[in-house]
Amino acid sequence: MCGCIDSWYKLYINKYLYFRTLPFDVFVRRAAEVKHKEYFLTEDEKYYLRSVGEDVRKDIADIRKQFPILAEDVNIPEYFEKEQFFSSVFRISSAGLQLWTHYDVMDNFLIQVTGKKRVVLYSPQDAPYLYLSGTKSEVLDVDNPNLEKYPLFVKAKRYQCVLEAGDVLFIPALWFHNVISEEFGVALNVFWKHLPAESYDKTDTYGNKDPMAASRAIQILDRALKTLEELPEEYRDFYARRMVLRIQEKAYRNDYG
Image (cartoon, rainbow, N blue to C red; front, side, top):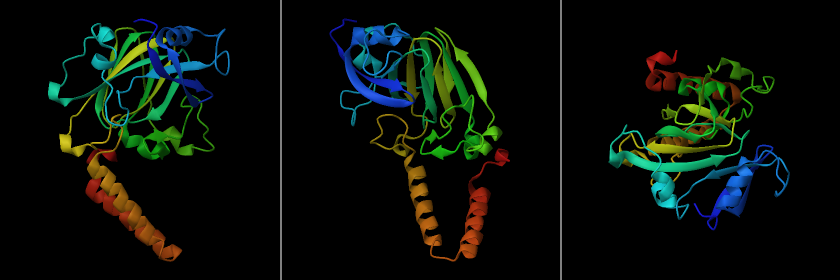
């Protein structure tokens, strides 16, 4: 890959992301370094590249289009039909970089090309213990969580694996995952649609917007909760509990306990 290609990347410092541009070869060199002689903010800043489409708002990431030469070196497992393909996201990350716990709405493969990653996963059934804000968990440090602030987190069952070069991890839709780069590494995420195409938000280019029916249900619930605010506290408490029971009876799977 020639060094004349400008690449967007994310500069990751103290759990904050800063967006900058660099020639591709300079970015790779910096991402592979532990201490930098040249840097933007600090000598130990970490770098992260996540490929996007030509138009971020309209086009999905596809390594075959954005990095066609590199795409030739990756064999994607034939686990789904071609028409189910959604995106292939090329990633480069510095050692020590951590992506917060989140879920995606599509099944995907995490293919480790070089380097080593540690992946911590949690079942969708443990969502009540993960302190969600949208698709992400507020618990940033899963190894040393603040249990005074997040006491229910101890109830979430942790699954963990280490990916090395050539390893592929299947991450089912809705499974929470936290990814830590233990070494400088290159990886590829491949997402595919396993629900009917009309179930997905057509404006979603990242594969992380909730299915249309789920979004509508959440909006209806928000309106219902807003309506309950018209009642005195003891009535609001009583009818909220009835709503929870109704949801458990009608929507929970039997194995949710």
